[in-house]
Length: 258
Image 1: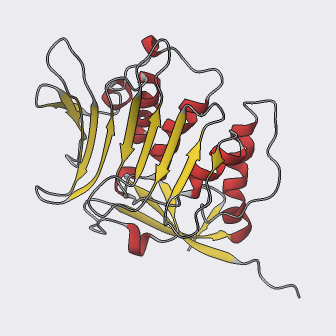
Image 2: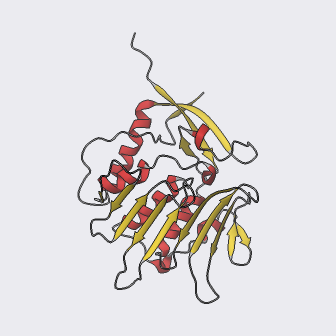
Image 3: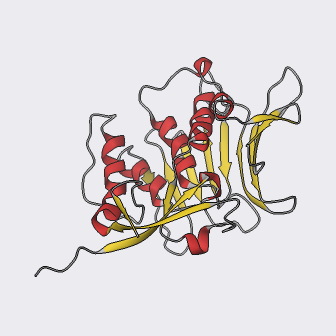
């Protein structure tokens, strides 16, 4: 009798902004394999540096106890000054990946068609402080900084109570609106995100704040989710990815309840 298929215990978390950071490979490997970004190699430093094919964009991932772990810098272009985006350690990788996917999209929408507030309004975020929006559970806030008539940087903050900041994301004033909108659309998505390390990554396990559904997922699906993501992104271009890649990021389907 053949052995039973190997399974992995996976937690599906909502709301996604309180799911913890997740696997950085969800961002870095597709950028390298599907989008052609190159990476440096410094085994003595706990950091990742990825640069776009045209060397206009640089993604920097480095543990910063008192700062942002992820920083995306983009050089100036004829129609846009230089800009940057940064994300705290517990920013879910699904949200950051939405922004990097938008950056590498070969057929992006125009900025004029993008309103970063709109995806959040559609799911019931309400006005906050006269300059932003707050989530229905009051744990997430977004605002556009700057003086009236001179829009500035976008700021997204997730907190638990008054004194516990979970993560912060910032998009400088010249960041393309399509990137910020991709980020807020991912933030607005009510679908749960999968985590295999939620015991250590969740900022809270309070059931009144976070819903956690635990299931056993076939290991083959867990291993194949990142590979499928690479294939999907590579399909936007003419050059397909090469070589298999392992992943700890499971899909949000094909699971069986415990």
